[in-house]
Image (cartoon, rainbow, N blue to C red; front, side, top):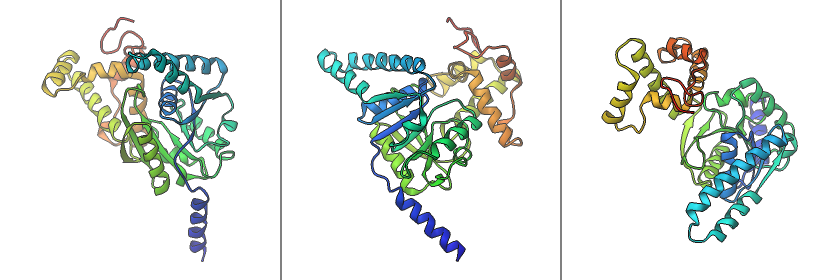
Length: 310
């Protein structure tokens, strides 16, 4: 009898949250990823509330969005600048800002979290939002390395929780990984997929596995290149040349590592190693640890595996 009651309760809770197309979106975090998501969503007709900790941060983000839109308009409306101006004002008009995350989700259809990659901080955020967001609201995270299941555990809407992993820069990169946990409902997952398509993205579906698809393949590839250097088998430059000319890659693994950021690579690897310490692909890299410890993080600091002009 108890199990029957649980099934009925689950069905009732799902029916209460019956989803239609996403019209109102709340993006938490206005950094590079969050502002990019907000820009593309607004450009595709969605009403967006962009949330961050202060008006100063939000004003800076909105300024960056406007500059990005101006670059788009310059190319798209080269023969008709007036249409370009209308395009920019229309997109900006669909983005509002707020420093109060609770009030920003009171009428939203979908929340996309794009804040710091810290499980505790994410869980604290979603726990608070879960108490004020409508029953139908879907929660999602743009995390690239933290299990969606672990984040969703802080809420009472695990069936209405999924992953939306965008790629940087969001206005340029077409791919969107749509991630489902074991508890994500079909209705929620389908809504997330349709939302991604409505944003003009090419969606790929993935279970909640370490690194999803792209990072699960890409990070071990880059780390294996580092291990080649650690063993003295080849130099970073020779490995990069080999992969570009031999495999047709646009960037070699060390060029890509410097672009992504060595601290980002280390953060992802450390997280995977903590959760699965016996996996050989997830073992720490002494060379990577050394460079990060010296503050050589790649292009953003002027030096990583290579030296870069700031």
